[in-house]
Length: 381
Length: 137
Image (cartoon, rainbow over all chains, first blue to last red; front, side):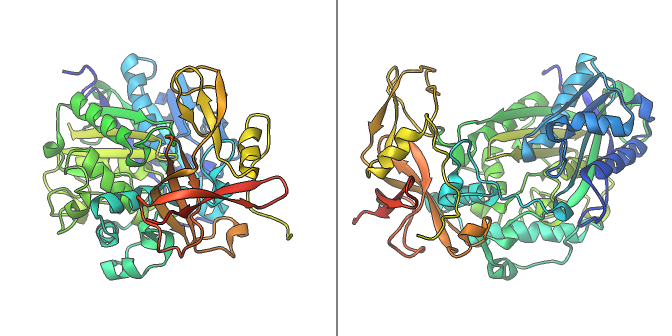
């Protein structure tokens, strides 16, 4: 048995309101999220001795975010740092925190993120690639990478836009059951099909919401967690994998590193796809969700389009996903809220969107130009 | 010629041969002299074998559409008049891949797998962009 299986507990989660929050900054949102997570855990600030952060898109200090957040919170950590992996950051920081508490280098690590991308005017429009940017040919924005993946998946396997729509419709339905979600009005496949093109084959309703908000997650060891107030939620398995080679890796578009990350997490946790009761799958675009099903072993290569049909991924279905609404309908917190929802599902506190009897949750993250992937398997303690 | 406002390459020592070749109507990329890997994007070191030795090699300019998308959203104001415009990820015969545009046909014509060949469009006095057209099947 892997020596890190079930050796980390998530003891506090905190999220600010989400949406357009005029007057907020990444720092004010990070601080508020931290206070909420601290309160949720029932910890005192002086117990937090690890601080892992992600800078917001509009954080002026950028990679020095760990210093700015630490200063604002008045914490002199034993263990700290800032990661810059886009939507892969949250899961990777969580794993860094898990390693730190298990190595005895910190007792309680807070992972913190705040961003005001919506009111701060961040456009997510940067062209991909270093040096001679692909923007020369008009290839730019996160939507471009995911559209490349979607287009090739459609060409090879016959995947359809309506199948992508199933994901958008499902996530919106789940958001309708989440009072904290930004977009709560249910949509139909017809609405999805009628929404304007962003980068073909992706419609507007295939895309994430640009939002303001903050999220914080606090971890410690299961022994220390015994004294705290919530039911125990354990990190049972962890995996991460990357490709740096957008052009030189022939399969980059298919994100095979996602499979490596999930398989490592399965192996550590001693579980497989049949054991997953609920999943929070990174969904910057609907097409991203498809590949998690294939790489997670929930369906065969090329079959994710039909897999998502027929209510399978909806509450009450075989594998409910993104039960809080995800990046499309809850809020685009770059995957941080996926961890929060995973913890809440394992605690059993999700009310009308609770997956009954759920004991194992897969949470995935992916970021940059499809480069960074990770998977965490949460388990009810 | 009206001012060209779209992103342009910054011509430097390392990339000048690529853009010089484009002005001559050729696609030229770096071939590793140690392991023969033809690489793109431009790099001072071979990502396969870490050799610094390379030569610039003229490629056939032929390839296939690996993936194909159409931009409707304006992410850069200089493209406002162009939308909808296409971007293709082109798999070149010799191995490397590059993003470019498919010219000469409507946006709904090119398909993944179509054979293409390079054409060259001077956009400024210094810069000629390699683009691609469909080869007759």
